[in-house]
Image (cartoon, rainbow, N blue to C red; front, top):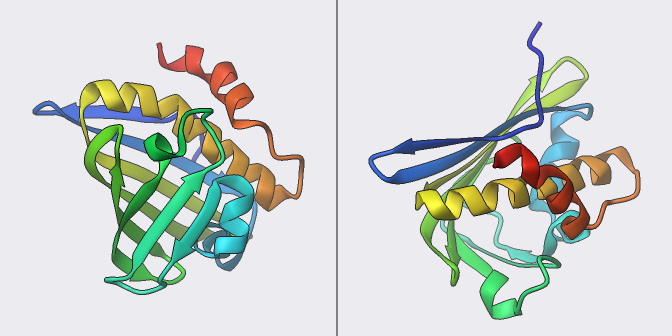
Length: 165
């Protein structure tokens, strides 16, 4: 039996970083897929999202947090992998970081789902800044799925950031 830790890792190779989180979510794969791909669900834990649900389609998200100008946190990109309910992969274009890629991989695990989230192509400095924020967003995803109060992103960031120093 695998034991899951919600803490992410940063892997650096040739000055290119990848964030990786592996979490077991106590929900069926179809429900997790819906939470990461349905704009109505995604808005609850991440931010307003438009998505063309197909490879080659576009995805755009305006996260609710962090408390910075919308122009700094707006994300857009082309969907490069659309394999329901197993893989969503898309480009990540955001003004504050270099172009990168995000991938959500879902695998059924009994009555739950194992989510492997990766964000690759980042500069090491950006990855170190993004890892606690990504952790906070994934905690918000978990709360959304669990039907519990979704924590404020800023509070979760502050709580988990010391793990990554």
